[in-house]
Length: 61
Image (tube, rainbow, N blue to C red; front, side, top):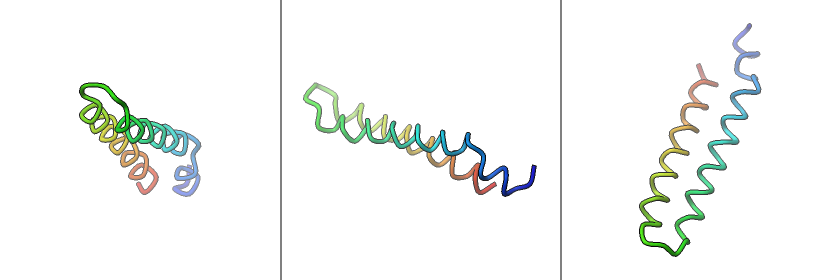
């Protein structure tokens, strides 16, 4: 496969959508009202950021 076809692969964009959903869950959990909501939200947001960076760097590669 050429690099353009590889960059336009569906799996990259599915991974980006998953990362965005994880990030949104992390953002919305900041407003939740339970004991460790902020800590849980920060961890989920960090996971979403890591997944998004993985997807972006795999597209660039």
